[in-house]
Image (tube, rainbow, N blue to C red):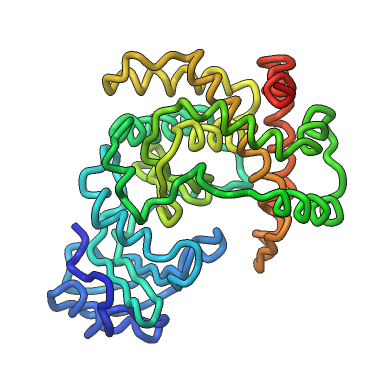
Length: 350
């Protein structure tokens, strides 16, 4: 359970590692505990904010993970809301949250989370085995099924509207030139055609997705945000800072197009539909999900290309992830063109 810290909890949101003291943690958790060591963790994987492993005495476990971040950015205080309001009833295993607080005046937030070690960290640079991908699909399907068509999400103001971004003509035009100048032309023929028609592709994707039921989305689903416990067999989704509501296939697209090889797409979609049905969504068909997945690809292709045009990671590993991500975006288009020849062009051209 998340602690009772809420907006405006001055003094309970440290500014950095120097604020992670025994007295702070005791006050946050409302019990006596002594910090014996503090070390950075996860920095190589680009987690939003700064995360620390805090070794302690006085609690059931030997350590916790403390996440600190600036709420002035796009992540704002969303993840505190998630752990307070949605995580307690989530149908999948998540990191337990012991405390969360926001200091509205200082624009800072903190979470005290379960230390899931020993674990295996997912890595966007390393391919996952097919069994792991199926486990990720199953976890995501469980979340989606739990909130499928849940109208209460529409009134949850802190959740992002996943398809609500307003990509203007200026956004497409300016970023297109920056992308080409930085990364060069798109190689795959169909992907290059799609890249030249991104505003129309974005609109076509929105049209296909328009009839989809809304659900809870992780909305930042990549392998760096997933760890595996229980000897590497159980995926735990981390970093819910961008969670939102929208068509389920926006999460599914990240798995089948950015994590999986092209030949695995159809099988993973069938597995996803089977998992939804296991949770009672008997009316969802594979054909329906495949159609919507094509819409997600049309909509996501702009994110996977123009969305990184102005992204300049500070770490060497972060820089190294860009080209493989762009290659996977092209391969996603090539894969879909093999699965449904001509479908993308027919949707964009109307």
